[in-house]
Image 1 (cartoon, helix red, strand yellow):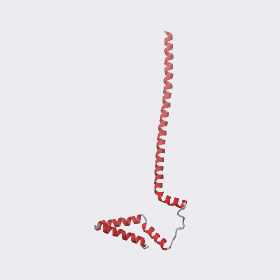
Image 2: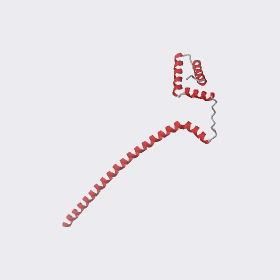
Image 3: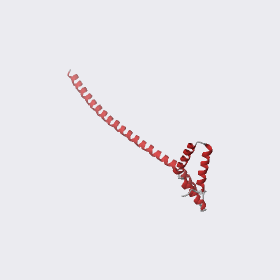
Image 4: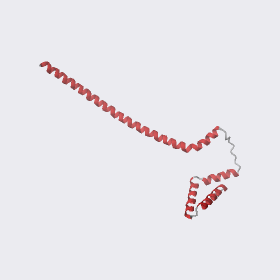
Length: 143
């Protein structure tokens, strides 16, 4: 596919700007290479050529730009990346909270089992104490 007029103009302006900015040919070459890489990464060539085609075919968007649904659609298209990143962040935080909750539940379970052990020991000691007191009372009554 050949480059449309907008893409040609963009490339021409960028090349001219580089040439006027620096005389270092290595730097010019690196900047031009980086520019081409960005054009490819963001699919600029296809988008500008599509725009040229739409304009040359007199394509008119008949959507009502004051319509709330259209405004919402445009707004959503601008925030989709931020929204996606935020959802990912929230999911990560939820997972961390779930893990923390599980850790706390495990600690509480351990503490409860320790409390039960201590209660049993206390009961044993109380029984032993009663037994010792009874023996002491019996010995005392024999004197």
